[in-house]
Length: 453
Image 1 (cartoon, rainbow, N blue to C red):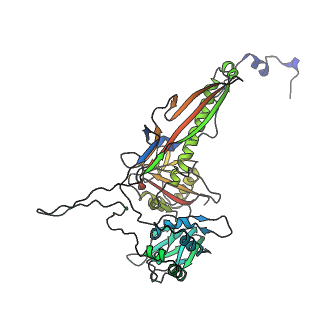
Image 2: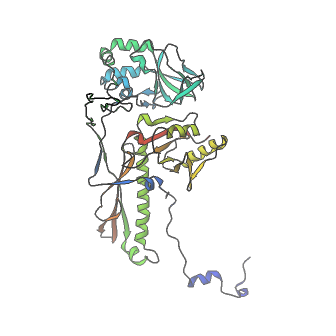
Image 3: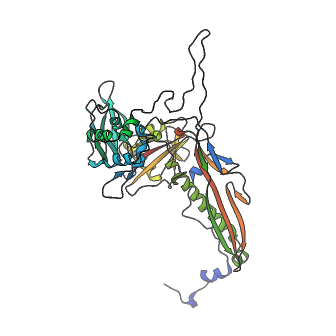
């Protein structure tokens, strides 16, 4: 109910505002996040734009992950990725690899399907396109013991390439609905008969002699001897083609009209606020690239030996234990907030009380840090990273350039470009960054984590 102007007995609020000022907040950004990865990584400054990681020479000791083309009605294995199978490592005949890829047929199976029975004849080579498969062996007292959970890109039965009479040394059972590519032992044998180059390659399988369990060339040592025994002799062999990490970059040009900068700079400096928000966006992009970039991103640079698959879908305490046991001195886990919530639900269902590390959930004393930049697929699956950090521990390190011209923050420069004929001031902002994994077991990932259950 409005009052008649004649009934007002004091100065109204809307009139009083004409003589007052308004207290304002600084501009806020919904897109801003805590950026825990940037804050927890130790940063190494580089004198040059490239960082080379020298390691001991290392040979493959296990299969990598094959890749698939799922653009058509039926999935197909990419022939070039079949070299990820240890037995095909170094085989370069593209025509034979294409023939092998064409031999696979797609198959959809339900949860609980037995793909391999321990002790029975191995009848097929299986590639997992989608889904999870558990691999188990009889335990000490006869009960089945799960030794591995396999996921997309992994295989069962590759030894059929060299052992046509192979018997399954384990039982493989689907834990979820699975999409598979299979090829029978008979068809494999026919392909080998028609491809002498492949048969010759397989007759000389890669030898594990002279390497340790990590694939590094063995350092010859003597121990347990007495007297004047002749000591072992040898040397430490280096990787001849070490990985080099080039610094990545994110840039933009910020434009501010001189009239705005001159006349509207109180109580807040317009240029300073524009720069602050732009720097925030650059740092957000930096963290996203460090996680998801196809070349330098952590999710793309996990060694196959450090990839494990969630057993049932939602992340369970057993999954976190498996991930934690793959490395020493894990500094922290990194997971999407929805994945952390899914893990807490699983712990609640199991009657477990989670640790706290400051404001963060922790598991076995290791904090689980949130990052919404780890992607979630349209089917509701994501990944959880585990990192050992630091140069001295052979961990994961962030990379920054040494001091830059016109440096505003470490690794970030603000450069005045000039004023154009329209009186618009232009600044160039550049952020340089990178991340390196010094030793393969410094970084691990739990894949196929479902957040909706």
